[in-house]
Length: 308
Ligand SMILES: [Zn+2]
Ligand SMILES: [Zn+2]
Image (tube, rainbow, N blue to C red):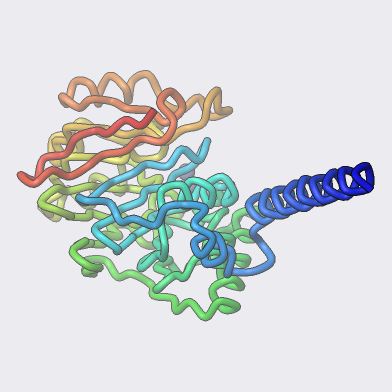
């Protein structure tokens, strides 16, 4: 009888071990393959598998998305995401680790794959308040496919779309956004990029998509206030962006270059790096540092925050 009892206990233990392993496998699969539904974040949150605490102070995060752009602005519960890189999956994991719950405004600077490739997945996985994007489909086939998937996802998830106007403003829970489109009909799609100047907690951040010197010059001629403590450097630090005059107007403390390791474009350009340094900016690169984070302190200054 005792031997039977021991055997029964061992069987129970084996069942528990197998059930635990299956549950762990299921959770891992759910984490890796989030595409089938938009409800995974809610499931994970309910299970307490990742934090949902809003940051204590406003934050600015340049998510490492390889060769592409992605800027995350947060103030309390409110979130603005500008561009999503090419790979929405790695971005999704990062947003979960950051504890992002919903995205109030999802903004595309311009419809190139390295900026909008992850838009569809983000709209499927998160509650998105509104999508802000130009209404000009790109010419390139790959970019056009990304653009189409983005619009399909917006329709499927019932995310309303706005086309930001040059000079438009938007307030999202203490995050003040100004939109500039100095060359909306330029033949080069990069030059049509939307400039987004964000102010949060007394600090300014300027994101210029892949705009080049022509768009920078057109904007400068309008005498707009372009000052920003943090500049997301235009077009991944290419030679045709970040003119000395533009950098003088922005006067950034930090210049962030979002760029892939050993990318095929030779970004960032050595001359651009020199111009940024001559402008007095501390240059930070995602290919060297990974995701780059800043906190906005009470006095409105920005401080880079480093996580282990
Ligand atoms: Zn780009
Ligand atoms: Zn581009």
